[in-house]
Image 1 (tube, rainbow, N blue to C red):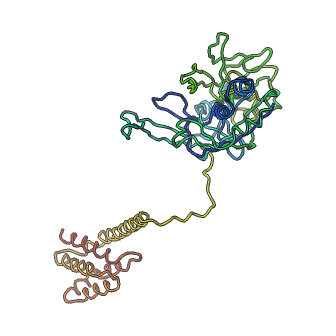
Image 2: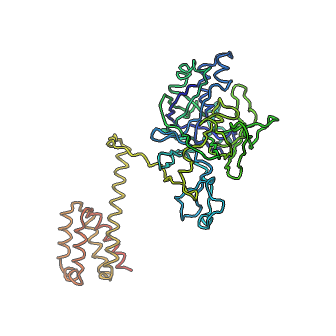
Image 3: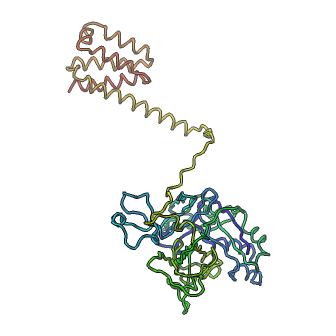
Length: 474
């Protein structure tokens, strides 16, 4: 068997819808299913049905895995469904493994009201579990009427998409019969490609290249009779009548011989959707299966190989499981089932590059002047309001209203700060007004406010005189 490890980088927003429905509330998956990469390879290599194309795309001998969000060269995994967290804020950073909880739960754990962790991809590295940021964008679109060259009526819809820049890792596994086509398959996949919905618009551009990364490991030292089966991919099982089932048998889970599935310890989540077949322009049969992240607990004397593909639709990435994953082993939790990992979120990336110089344009220049004006007005008004609050009791009567009116007139005709200050001082020293301004600290408070730094004296006196004249008349 040969494994090809690949990296997928989103060069634009990508739409991977949860369902094929065209109406209703539509959400995007937070990973890229393997059937997208199967389609990319088929578009390059599938000219007609023959032995080669049947082996690569129909036999299940070649399996295109799901692409998961990654971090620091490690492929993320869906948070295992056996991981529980307290509902209450007290102990919100704690995590518990459901399958390792004691039968008789202590009172302090029961009071925390544990709930299942369901969303998010995590990277487990030693004692740290980091949630990978998977950003999404929602956009409203309208169908286009080509005849009238306008938007069609009643044709408004929304798209949720994965944000560009996200890096995902996936694998392509080839059995021995297909390894001779490994190089040809790699060439077909690598390069700039399109996937997902609305590829002819602004969505779906990705870059695929070979890259090595770390996968979820299996614990080979497990001696316990209980074997954990972690669903790294979505699982689809059919019963003896060919109908979908959510209760697989031991043989379907990859075990030979006798054993028992401990359903009370399992945590299984499900999904259902009908894929759209573009070639036939019709929906395929409904697929009902078990969601990735689900965990089965099996009591058996034998353990299959660390990783395997089980169930149906393996060529599309369905069915990948990991037996006894290292992250859920006994030594990763204490006696009460509390996980020893430190769970946290991915830190926002910061750049050390110097800020790029922004080219000055007429619009930017206008916005800059408007911003400076708004700040100048705000600073002036703040000083004026403070002066009125502190000193309005010192100025009463119509005579001071006319005095402030004269000061405002001086400010209106003099823009130079030095000349304006001289004019105001001369006015305060003129005639009978001098005695009135010298009393009760009126002159002193005016001179102090005129010395306010980093402010336009003309705008200050115009606004201050106007407000004080109103106060004197009231």
